[in-house]
Image (cartoon, rainbow, N blue to C red; front, side, top):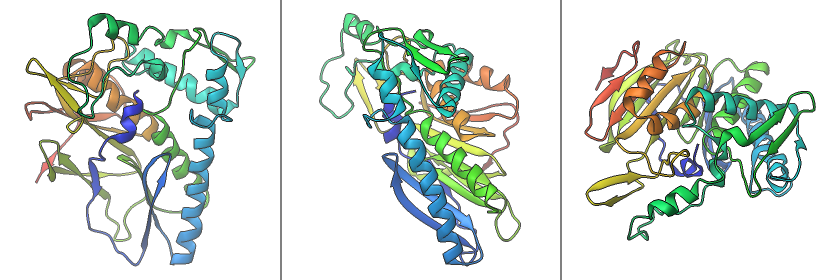
Length: 328
């Protein structure tokens, strides 16, 4: 949803319960964010080869979806906004098509055209007065997923409004984690984890036969975890807004902004989503902030194989129907 998500603190950490002789891990910066890639392998040279493949795949995806690279397909779409449709690869076309489906599912709380938004909200301490209602309304004038026109037969993407933009800040890392996982499985890697700054995708089991487990950070005390949960062949994404916010007239405005209104979300501190794919979990985690806890939980409960944990700004824990939390 928001480019700001690229700067969120990852709220999920691996518990220290693995055999270090069989699990190999590398930490590096990709897509402007921290990636931790872990694989179960026979030796370090085999693991290095596998991790190199994952890095190549993530880098390939970044070149397609980056709006910072003037030569990317995404940049070409943006350059031709309001001018003409642009033919793109099937991979990018399908990613945008799925993004629009999520926009419809969330009533526009998720919207890749958020990149068109004027950045009038500052969360670095420089914003001293609240933006005017007029400025806030104007900031989202070019935002709206309905203005992203896809032609399946011609495989083209057209942004109807001049100056309109798209960005994959709230779905790109999750998609990259999914693709890296898929590639490694196809190469015979039996188990591993791709952790893209809190967008975590797992497969297989630990060498001791146990499930991977994740500890979920308490957003009101980020040095402590409040729960630990097993994850098996699925993705888990945590988004938090407890570090970047401003306060006006006693109300806290956070950095996750509703693309429909231009106003920051409020009432939620942390969202964790479990889903079959990180791409979907990534998009839903941000959308729930915008939709709010009641609508968010209701929407998640209608989706198969998806669960979530919400922590509101008072510290209350709200879960979807089938979550079983083992509190620490």
